[in-house]
Image 1 (cartoon, rainbow, N blue to C red):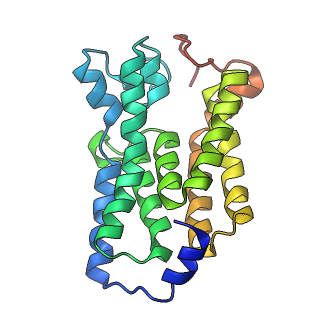
Image 2 (cartoon, rainbow, N blue to C red):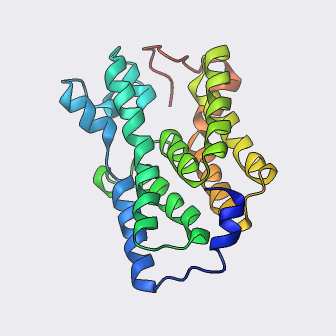
Length: 217
């Protein structure tokens, strides 16, 4: 979806409240699917909440040494954001509300009812949201994450850097305010979830990608 297409669709589309409520509920429930736990169980691995950072996400699953399980978790979590937006589009949600649908899916991942509202940090899911909303924005953000990850090998630093730059990329690319606002809120929550990681980074205690060392909480 391009900025021009946003401009063409925003004044034209309308949706009823019941359909939007349905899209919101669907987005949250999709976001609640705990792929890290599901994949780990399928591979006979320990529950990711029981070791490492305790975070049910791809980076922690990688600490088991099972790269395929970590990759499947990453793709599953990213797909949640994209699928939630896809479902919203199919039921007629207007373009100016799609960013909010993505935000709700992200919140479902971070605060899932399926895990007692104690979910992941939302990095993969937010990437899926950004790619579905406007793929150049998603690619720019993902490229930032990969650059930092491969050069410095800190997943948390990669996520923090990419998150901080995502709203700036969105403004630079000319995306409308109704899209930038939920993106900024999503980034804010993601950064708050990484507060502990930031403290460990500053103290030189953060684990690098692939490390099995248990970081302090």
